[in-house]
Length: 587
Image (cartoon, rainbow, N blue to C red):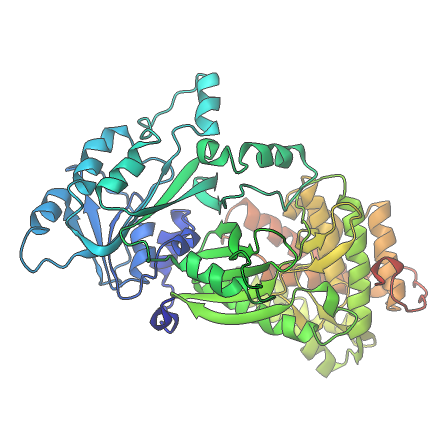
């Protein structure tokens, strides 16, 4: 693995960079399939502008190739602050390749899983580019091609429905491997891709797709069959190929799997080398890669790789949180263990143990059982970490004020509305003592890993919003609100009903009362804590436009909660219950 690249520091994202990267909806986490890019000259064909942008941030030089004379402008030119991007026509490239002193390229990238460039109509240009041994490519160079899969399930479905495909037909399945061999490829790695909203969402391993989310859903069982080891290369929506001129050249993924695969257990002599078992790709140059022994899953590890500022900041916050949670004996077995942190080829890498369970984000049968286990974990976490804090001026400034300030900074258009809460919140809390707890900050059932047969909670993940000391009750409100979202409500609808209007179902009220009794919280605190939940959501979870229906809806909720804070309705005081570890959470 390229150690020099590990030390590279990426420049901060500019507003233009962010627009280009996100408007093209192009997650660049697939780039770990390539060899290390630092110090390399890369040739690319780019349909969106985002690929050249991502490559240029890690490579020495990027040249955008045009093989058609009148390509329309994509509208997403690389950011003007990237001076290492140029362009060349196919004729000019092939002519210059035979010129003395021509510096050959280290790699070619054509990332086109939607088939905007790699299709039958472009076959002549691709053949010219890769023919005659590709004289423009270095002897140890490599080629990456991602294209629409000609036999994909989507194409078969469109044919059955007689849907009109506005794009030219994709290249036949055997065409790209043949062209890569003509370019001097000695080894070709093939990766089936699953797509979401036009971008690569998952790179499938040789073993095929394995459901780790909503496993009880019939659609997930069907995906396991359709995209299993045998059918995935034929039926996946897109396919990626990485061709190496030298068999000893390895990709970043290959090197990473070897490095992280042995972190939890050393292989015995003659044992199988670790393999990639899951590869999830997210927008913003983030990927999650699981690796381990091909024979068993008990010692698998998961690496979270980030290269954009937002994702890297979140993981940098999460890492020390996991280390702190590991020092709480009752909680440590129920959170992932951080194994290593290092930089790799322009990305930050955080390696954790892989919990052998599943997650959910749909209304599947285990939802309520998993939610109950999550509720019991929350009681355990907060009991183990609670420190009684008087909500005098110092206590308010320590627990509540940072939540309000974060909301004002992240969405400043709401600053005055949230600022109006300051006085009534101080008044509502000043005579009370609150348990300052270890707050998860994004406590949704989606962040719970559970054992699928018993629904037993195995681990709670995604601690990037965690805070200690944090406010009580807010985590439970996240759990209740986002369970409504899972069942189909928009998040504004869920928060408006649960937080603003306090319309709770019988089950929600039971969980609320159980939590309030566990920490002897006076019910008169509910209006203040509900308001602080919405402030926390605005300050940690969302970026809103300055106008539009969504902005107006949130503004309306803030106004209504302002009135609730001034009215301060008094509810009955819930008696305290004896403390203890919930039965379902006991070892």
